[in-house]
Length: 138
Image (tube, rainbow, N blue to C red; front, side):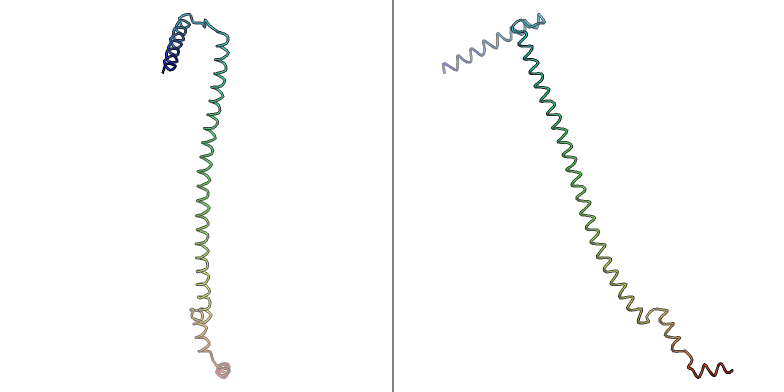
């Protein structure tokens, strides 16, 4: 307990001394104690701050670019998967259409079409050879 009290009082004393020193330096406009060292230390702190800021800005821009690429990648994956789905659907429609066309083609070979019926009628009503000769004779 005694050591904690010593640390508290020493910290309070140094805080008071530094506060008074900084107020005096503010009124003079210049540093009174360790001016060159403190100026050098300010330069080091400023360089460190600028380095940290540069790293932060770089990491933020990299994060934004990475996020953009991730979103674009997912969007393109969705487009590819929907294109594949449409392709499979069109292939099934094409197969059904081919089967229907084959069925219709086989059906029309059996003379069920209009032209087939005309050809069938022509064959039924065709004149025999003897009828053709009689007509030629007239």
